[in-house]
Image (cartoon, rainbow, N blue to C red; front, side):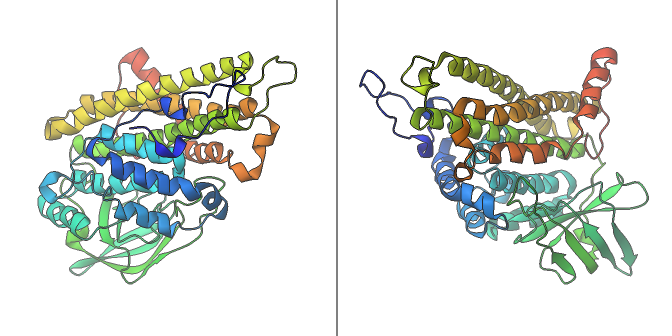
Amino acid sequence: MNAPHSAHAIAPAASGNPVSYTVNHLFREDFGRHTEAVEHAAARLDATAVQRDKDGGTAWAERQVLRDSGLLTLAVPATFGGAGLPWPDIYAIIRRFARVDSSLAHLFGFQHLQVASVCLFANPVQQADLLSRTVSESWFWGNATNGLDTRITLTPEGDHFVLDGVKSFCSGATGSDRLNVTAPRGGDPADRVFLSIPTDRAGITVHDDWDNLGQRQTDSGSVTFSKVRVAADEILGPPGTRGTPRATLRTLVSQLILTEIYLGNTQGALGAAWRYVHEEARPWFSSGVARAADDPYGQIRFGDLWIQYQGALALAVQAEHALQRAWDKGDALTARDRGEVALLIWQAKIAAGRAALDITSRIFELMGARATAARYGHDRYWRNVRVHTLHDNLDYKLQDIGRWVLDDRVPEPSIYT
């Protein structure tokens, strides 16, 4: 279905005849029975995105829009009352939201990442409880799972555990109902357990200390834990984080969420440039054309950027379907299977990151100096991508790909691989 918020009226062409198409011809998407809910939510997010990006802080009203949309349970299996939607369909919706509001798309994507964590790590009793209540109680999940931040301890005390310390980059923790937390069991940060606890439990303090140049409303600040009681059955597992090759798919689910955020920002930038060129830009004085859209150099540049985007999108879609096939294999998934999916996702992420950084910067060459005015918010696409692409060193993913090319070796599972 075409995106209604993008259907801007276009001024008449030089011939006096109106242009007969809109930006919708660029991004034709159909979300099946969820289309109406997706497009309604996207329009609501779009309406205030520029101003909220400037304001930062927590997007309380927009978080409620997502809660009310019925889309927070798409990854919950139908057995527990959710939609049980395939991952490629979920990723397409994340990408759609990122086109208009990268921060809320991030929170939306991480909601499904936390659900995936329960599906992959929890035992059957825990799954039945947590997933069913995600649906029945309309939970919005937050996370405190930064594996490289080991300033946290989990200490046994009688029949329970005590959680102390701090976690950073806790996207979505503000205002969440439930919180996934990781804590190391020893000196190795990769040897960690997942906990699922209520965000309002005594001793948990969610800090409003996220003030970065992009992803301004992801509430990705820090959380402090002070003598927080954790019951033994709130530690997910078995299988836990290392139980099976299938359990290690969580990292891959996460990496593709970030890839879709890159691509959504790219779509947003291309769409914004398209509208500006048609509605506001003036042709260069020596171009000999009446409309900026008819400038041959502008057309060449648009074509170049479009090819970059399409190539990255194709790799992402390929990776999404590979992940779904791996997910469907369940415990029959082998380490080799898992590694090959990881390589496809690394390729998609690198291509999407490169394309997004380039395209979100170069749109200004198409629009001109007046398009840099703060009121348009055109810079937010680049800022969002720039923040995200720094969270993961892509050189090491390139090394993984090169090692496979040279020696047919697939990457070993870790916090980021």
